[in-house]
Structures are given as structure tokens and as C-alpha cells.
Image 1 (tube, one colour):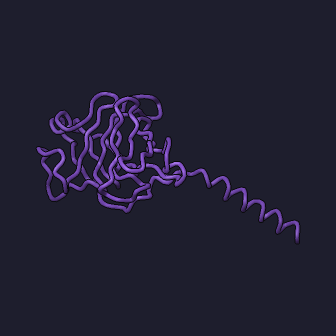
Image 2: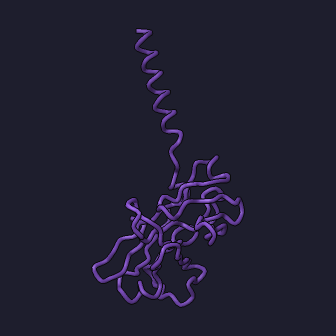
Image 3: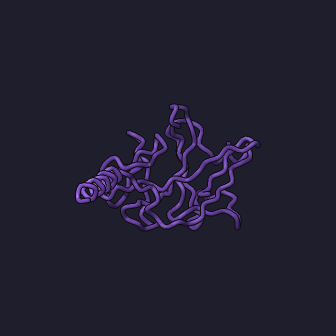
Length: 168
């Protein structure tokens, strides 16, 4: 009986240790995200088209200033970073993340893109995040210690030539 207890205890310890390296990409509060760029014209105007290109959407701050926000548009906790990165096959793909740094946990503390290496960098804690691969995982700073990455949003293509960004 004691050996079975020891084996069970060892198995639990192994499971817990293996789970310790997991990055939490849902550290921020869940706020609705819905940005409709589903038609070709909206995507051409407000979308991203080449590797490393990005755009910020923040409805409360009116960014971009000429975007046709409506009552059905939501931009998450701290805003949305739309970024042209790469999918798992290495093909260019639009990706979306919450702008708020998950370490700071404040919608007013946003990440920005470092043009030299295309990392997202927190303006306050200086944590760096990998946005080019679509994972939003931490690369350096307190984000590694906290095991948090940027919240990731879904970007789905539409039949009318654009994309739709949401958290559902």
C-alpha cells in the first residue's frame, strides 16, 4: 500500500512539474473583441499586408481615428494589435493580440512593436513578446518570470476578401 502511495505521489509531482512551463495567454480579464474587416475594401484600408506590418485598434481612444467603429465593435481589454506574422507553416498570416501587457495588468500600459526585431515590448516593465510566430509568448523580462504571454485573438478570413477579429 505504501509503494502505491509513493508511485501516485511521484506521478502527481511529475504532472505538476511538466505543467510549470506552460505560458498563460489568458492572464488579462476577458473583454469582448469584435472587429469586422471582412470586406475587401475595409481590409485594404485597415488591414496588414506584409510581414511586420501592424495596426492598432482601440475604440475608447478612437484609434485609428477614421475607422468606422459602431455599436458592435469591441477592442478587448487594452486595445487590439493586428500584426502580419507567420503561421506554423511559415506563411504570412494576420495575427491579433491584446495590446495590454499581461504583467502590468492595466489597460493603459500597452505594448508597442520594436521595428528592429518585430517584438512587442511593454512600455513599463520592458518585457518582450514574440508576435511574429503568432504565439505571443514571452522572450525576456518579467513576463518570463510570471509565465504570461499576450492574449491571442482569432483572425478568420471571410468569403468577401477580408478578415474578422474576435475572441470567440
